[in-house]
Each structure stands twice: as C-alpha cells, then as structure tokens.
Amino acid sequence: MLEISLKAEELFEVGSYVITNSLFLSFIVFLILSSFALIFRKTVKLVPDFAQNIAEFLIESLLFLMDSVLLSRKKSEKYLPLIATIFIFILVSNWLGLLPGVGSFIMHKEHGSVPLLRSPASDINFTLTLAIIAILSTNLFGIMELGFFKHIKKFLNFSNPIKFFVGILEFVSEISRMISFSFRLFGNIFAGEVLLTIVFFLVPYIVPVPFLFLEIFFGAIQALIFSMLTLVFLSIHIAHEEH
Image 1 (tube, rainbow, N blue to C red):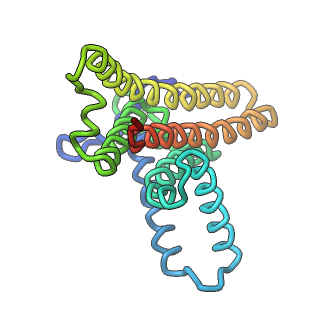
Image 2: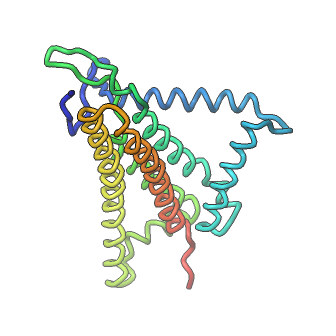
Image 3: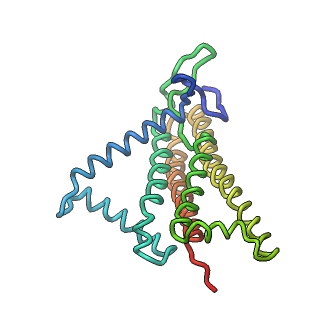
C-alpha cells in the first residue's frame, strides 16, 4: 500500500518548475477536453445525430438552471462558457481520478515510489487556484457589467461610515469565499480518495464497488456545487443596485 500523502507528490522538473502527479493529470484532462471540443466543433450538424442531441440536451439543461439564478436567457448564454468550463473540468478531473487502475501507475524514485496520477482536486493548490480564478472572473464580469468605479464602490465606499464598514465586510467575504471554495472541494475529494484507497487495500474485491459509485456521485455533486456557487456570486456582482 502506497503512503497516503496530504500534498501532491513530485514527479519531475521542467527547468525550475515542479510537475506533480495531480498537475500531470490536470494536463491530461486538459488535452482530453480540448481534443473533444475540437472534434465536436468539426462534427456539428444542422440535423443533430444521437451524440449531438445529448450534448444539446445537457447544454439546454444547464442554461435552464442558470436561468433560475440570472433570470435572463441572454445573460445565461453570455456566462455559460465560464460556468460550463468550471463544471466540466472539475467533473472530468474527479471521475478520471477514480478510474480503476489510475492509482496503479507507479513512478519509482530514489526516495520510494509515488503514484503517477492523482486526482487534481485532491491537491489544495489546484482547488485554491480554481477558487481564485472563479472569484476573480466573477469580479471581472461585474466590472464589465457595471463599470469599474461602480463595482469598486461595493468594497470602497466613503460616503458614510456604515457603507465603508459594509465594503470592508464585502472584501473579507471575497477572501473567505476563496478559502471555503478551495477547502470544500479539496476536503471532499481527498477524503473520498483516502476512503477508496483503504477499502481497496483491505478488501480488494466486491466490497469497494458501492464506495466507488458513491464517490462518482459525490464527484458530480462537488462539480455542480462549485459551479453553482460561482454562478450565484456572479449574479451578485453583475446585479445593478436598486434605489
């Protein structure tokens, strides 16, 4: 049984840049999704086939879900790329890390053996980076929608002491969102991987199957929660202040 490490294990270095096993799997997910997007773009038809029907159904379902938050189909279509990208990337990352045999690829190093692949979301660096991207993106769209100075007034408002204090709370809440985003996703995925590792080691046959399906479900739920919370925060930032 490999040692369970809280941090991602280092595989090799490219110059001064360290490549970890979670980062390596992130690259693989990026290549898979990029290849699929290019192939799908070239095969889109005016009369959709079975695969295109499924893709259009999923996109329409996500747009319908976004409509319930943004209350506008135009806005839903505008911000779909951000929400869909976050959801799909986390979902594929979580599921790919659960595939049987993924943890079986071992890289032997001087100080022992480390798994070649590790679920990206089980690395706090990945989830923190994703949280920062999500929060910065929602603020950027808020600036584009409201204007720079009107958006900044949410955080820096000197019109009166109460609004100034509320602005400070808003700024602190943005930082807390990054932290809660990253630790929520990291904690759930890492705990699931540890559970599966222990169960597979103790009882390698039959018994781990229900746990595997449970983690597949949790992987989808975590991707949905992360993307929907991003959508909610986005709706707050692009909302015009009513007088």
